[in-house]
Image 1 (cartoon, rainbow, N blue to C red):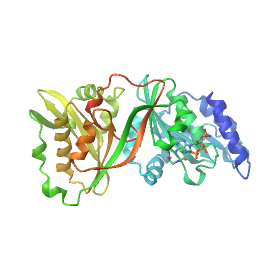
Image 2: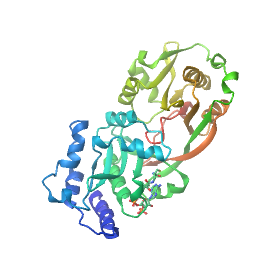
Image 3: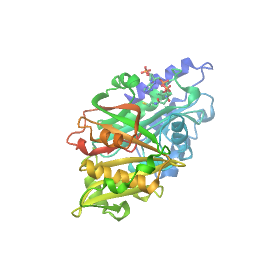
Image 4: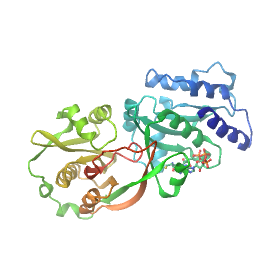
Length: 356
Ligand SMILES: CC(C)(COP(=O)(O)OP(=O)(O)OC[C@H]1O[C@@H](n2cnc3c(N)ncnc32)[C@H](O)[C@@H]1OP(=O)(O)O)[C@@H](O)C(=O)NCCC(=O)NCCS
């Protein structure tokens, strides 16, 4: 199915390009049929770009390939995403690879990436797709690059429950690919804090009784992963290990009676701009304790939080307490069913709408 759908997309491209050049189907087929993961991060690119180096089509104008994003192009999701207002960082690209070495997909035209996205298989049952983006000069021209990459990504996630986040105006496009809204959404909240906020702020007012905050490095990873699993649809030990290693992220774990009662991280996006997430907690008091501790530690000039909105509204109440304002809403969509049994009342922030 993938090969034929992709072929159709590329066929469309061939006819719509002004120069109507020859599309190299040999490398495309090779790449799509390749099932083995890149041997290493640095190998991934050579697989995508040189595995078929013998083909004369390689350097031929109009040659299109669908494969894994070359490590030399790992900066592109960050650069292109920044222009869309996404908060993906360099370390997120690597974090995604640590979770799933085959997660990054790209369409290349004449050996230049023109479209990319990630499809992260967290485990045999759950995946997320995101960072779906085509280079501006090839975008929305009906050239088919986006469709081809999207199909490759969905081939990778297979029959896993697959999550994505979509704005209202494009949700219908994903419905055609088998995704359905589940009634929940994620809202990006923001606040500039250089407006007198700090004069009225005292982190001690947000302390939850009996709770101690530990640095995330000091916490047993298995305990943390077990706690995280109550709120995220797959076990994320690798994800958490990478997060803990990331020197630019501060993480804290709320411990009560020797047990994890909540955890969160705060990451810097640019000078003075910080984003809280993920943030999960057993009670609103524990969430507020963590939230206030992050503010106290970083004193952001601007704060961002991607807040999962569910029926109980705890997360929305928390960010409103800190005077944060709603910016943009994306809908949670799933394909192949939806995750069950998650403790929605304890979800206060996700990492971002690209990772989940
Ligand atoms: C979405 C995007 C990646 C589509 O890439 P593209 O290469 O222009 O798309 P193609 O030429 O392959 O084909 C257009 C297809 O994408 C669909 N599409 C257009 N905008 C879309 C969007 N924002 N989200 C999802 N699908 C979209 C079109 O309906 C069309 O599908 P169809 O042929 O089945 O009708 C591109 O418009 C883009 O980079 N947009 C900015 C980033 C963005 O909004 N990403 C999506 C986040 S939800």
